[in-house]
Amino acid sequence: MTPRIRAEAAWWTDGQAAAALRDGRAVHLYAAGADAEPALRAADRHGDLLRSLILADPACDVDAVAGLLGRITVPTLVVASALGDDTDLSVPQRLAGEIDNGVFVVVDGCPAPVHLTRPESFTEWASAFAAIAEGLAARYRSGLAAPTPHIEGVLA
Image 1 (cartoon, rainbow, N blue to C red):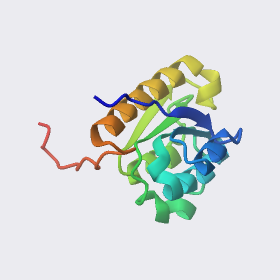
Image 2 (cartoon, helix red, strand yellow):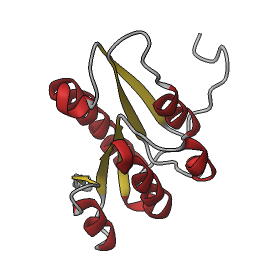
Image 3 (tube, rainbow, N blue to C red):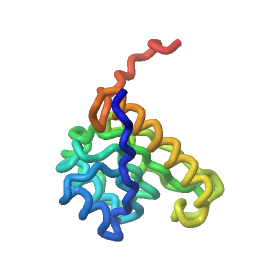
Image 4 (cartoon, rainbow, N blue to C red):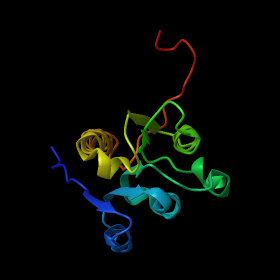
């Protein structure tokens, strides 16, 4: 049995993720707010090195990145905060929906940014997702698994 090597968790904003990718190290890439766009571009360029992409309250022009969303196949978690019923979730929902292996989670009653105002919830979602991504990487001996087809009635 091959020993499993866990990828490091790195936030885009602090430069650790960019350095790890330059060095060819596997990472779980975290980004929040406006850092979502450069993180998405990094996932497009370095998807083979990413174990997962985890976005917290992403803020970007989805139309500007729409062309690369379909090319991103790394398991991606998009966590959005929703303070009330009138919270606009269109950006994070669209990002998750247009990325193969994308998952969308809403933390209700939470002001943005979710990773700072509800760190316990964000950490639980992100760490569970990273563990799943590690398992997929070990199973498929790569950083990603084939996208799951969404066929109506297949799981009924």
